[in-house]
Length: 497
Ligand code: NAP
Image (cartoon, rainbow, N blue to C red; front, side, top):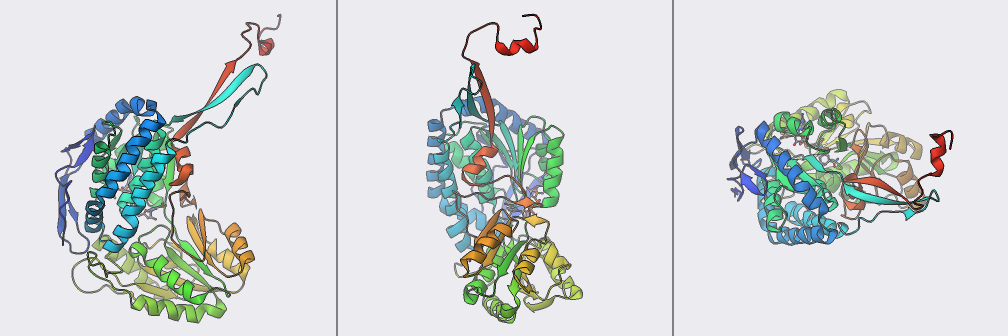
């Protein structure tokens, strides 16, 4: 079933209402069928200007609202999003092709929980210190909203990525202009509509739809914003940072990943096999934290490869609307071609395709779960982000070799270590260079804990109280408590006192 979105008449959301914008016409496509899902006009450059002006005009009112007032609106938004869960699920499945089970059990409830978390967090913005540090003054700390935030998000988890950026910004008192990926705008538009229904004042949250090369560029380099937050690929993230740097704007970047999945010789092999398949195939492997590089103790290597191949071969690939489907299509035919080309080049670099490596016949951009063993450390599939249902495997000799291989990447977003030795688990979590290290699991996230990478995976945090800090400026207020004219430090200016 293809869903025609409730938001299909609206192209962007500016100043608290749906707006028919002046850019090119665009059709949102269902990747499972190739059928149209929604028809819209994209934003034009002056629509971006309007959205930024609207966010600027709304800023002081929202930033000046009490934490309790902001919290109440966000709590209502969480409630409305929960009530609209099936609409959000239908839109997310139809525009991304992700299995309905994933959208219903992960994307949407996870987003609702995140909104709810930030409704609470909005009331915990107290400063850290107030006191006399010079003897003559009282100092205090104010935490103030950074201002107008420009946000650019990817297509893989459209709703969650929007929520991870927008909600801490709103909780902090910022106003926002968000550009979702051109091909997946629907749930972000619905989020803005629900926020408006929840009582968010007009202009506090604006959505401009369009392609990265025009609307994204215009927003990232806009002089009228105060901060740019971005989730997407490392290459585009660097362009966004360069555009924001022209104005000296604060940036926060959540970029690509190439997560190692390290299986030590004392690991529970069955748990590691199942964890590797789940961790590599979630969202058809289009997940920045997905397990992509299995690094396995030599003693377990053959059994691990055989076990993963067997579990992968039973994965049900098909209609995302069917609750029994495990794996949906890749996002587009073009993306499938990129994944397939990378896999096809792997044998030339020493990789052995154990299972998968094929695209099923028929419509949609489907691709079979793929396991590539014996990959070389220099091979493309081992080093570069594939962003598809593909797991590569290598062996290691000892713990030092395992850690060295895990860290042999420019990325540093997520990793996992599988072991029953608590000391080894602690050492691995210390030594592996990544923003998140799971022990005996791979993928779970939780609203209270931060998500964000190191190195080529970016900097700054989404989710948790830590992400609120991204959207707050710290101001020092220093008040004279003596009332004297002839202040002690004036000796440095007036030689003859
Ligand atoms: P992408 O190509 O980098 O695009 C991300 C966003 O940037 C889209 O909205 C895109 O717009 C826009 N964009 C493209 N070129 C731009 C430019 N020159 N200036 C401003 N904006 C521009 O990434 P993607 O293919 O959508 O998503 C997959 C990537 O996201 C992967 O690398 C994945 O690892 C990463 N990701 C990271 C995290 C994390 O938390 N670290 C989470 C999810 C995804 P259009 O698509 O409309 O052109």
